Each structure stands twice: as C-alpha cells, then as structure tokens.
Length: 318
Image (cartoon, rainbow, N blue to C red; front, side, top):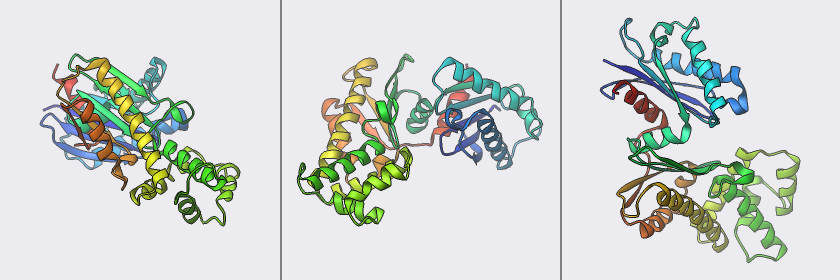
C-alpha cells in the first residue's frame, strides 16, 4: 500500500490530504496561509507543519507505514529559486521533531504551482484547463503530451482581468462616472452606498484611499456588481460581459496554444466569481462552447489538495 500527501498552500489557508493508492482520503488537515511571498519562510514552515500534523491526527494508519511522496501546490511558487526554498522547508520537516516525522523521512518531494493542482483536482486528471477567477485570475492548461500553457496571473496591477478585484474596480468606476454624468444611470451608486453605509457615493474616496483598503477587501465588493447585474442593471451587466470576454479570450488562447480546435476537453472553473447570481458561469460556458463545440465547462469535482495527492500518487506508480 502506498501513502501520499497532497498539500494546497494558499494565501488564506493550507490544506493537507493523506491518501492511499486506492484513492481513499484517510485524513485531512488545515492550517494558516503558506504563501511565503507574502508571509515569509518561517510562517510558511509552521503552516505546512501544522497542516501535515492535523492530517495525520485525523487518519488511521499503521506505525510502520511510510509516506512515499509529498506534492505541494503552492501560491507564489513560480521560479526555480522558489521551488528550492520550499524543498528546503520540507526537508526540514523531514528532519524535525514532529511526532510523525518517521513517516515523512523517505518521501519523494514534488513542488508545483497552485494552478496545476486546481486543474488536476477540479477535473480529476492532469489534462484540461482551469479558469480561476477569484480575487485574482489565471487560466492554465495541460495537454496529453504534458505541454502546459499559462495565460494571466499577472496580479491586480498588471493583469487579473475577469477577477473579483477588476469587477469591483470597474463597478466603482462606473458608479462614479454615472454620478458625474459621464455614464448612464445605474443602481450601482445605491448598491455601494448601502453596502458601505455611505451618505454619498463621493465618500468612496475616503473608503478606498484613506482607509488603505487592500486587494482582498476591494475584491470583496464584486458581489455588489453581481447583484446589480442579476437585477437587470445595464451598466453592471456590461461589466460582467467584459469580464466574461476577457476570461473567454484567455481560455481560447490556451486552447489554441496546446489543444486542437476539435479536442474533447474539460474546462473547470474555480473561484468566487463563478458563484455569483448573474449567471456569469452560464455566459462563459455558452461563449466557449460556441467557439469550441467539443469543450465541456464544469465546476470542480475535487478540491486542489486532492489534485496534489493525485499528482503525488503518479510518482509512486512510475
């Protein structure tokens, strides 16, 4: 029997799954964030250690069973230097005083970006495309030959088209333009006023600039645009349509790069943007299928940590 760990390390939490080669999840543990680009190496190390320990505490395996492979899909890991730093952290875990260190010492270590494990977990296999649209956005694909293509993921200043952040910014911009008279009337003005308890839409200045709101807090305003669009607001619907066009364009670029036009292909959508009321998922799916009739757009079948575990199992079967 082979045992593996699949780890999804993000900016908000770390999830670890302990799985056997029958694809049975034996344990699951959670801990704090593990994006070392934003929280540093030591905090990342502590989160990984806690998530692994918690997964073992939830599992039932024999004292002589060993972990054959550990796959970590981590946010912020893109360069070779990043990968080596994370590998060093895992090796420290393998030599630490953790109660379960005996199970980790001989494990093979695989490190990849979080888009790959979202793809594998979402579809259940390492072939297809993931369209992630949450606070930020990225489209990532992998074909049967193992060729990959990434589009986007350049951050809120340089990219992230179709993300919650960009939708929220576009919504506030449209509300202010409408207030000025440069845009047609929109319910977004009242939407932002009510949600933020503003006397006037002009008070957005104080909220956004003087309170020092970061990307996540701004992105959390995207549901205001979504609600307005679902209620039929023309301006809000134009914003949603623009987001859909950007995500369709990015997905089409991936398909054109590594898949054939008539490929039978699954595209999995992940992230908060897809859970809106304005049917953005249906709009996106209709646009993609119109361009690529053999494509099927789905919601995730499994979580990213499960995808990491599947990738780890692959290495034990080679």
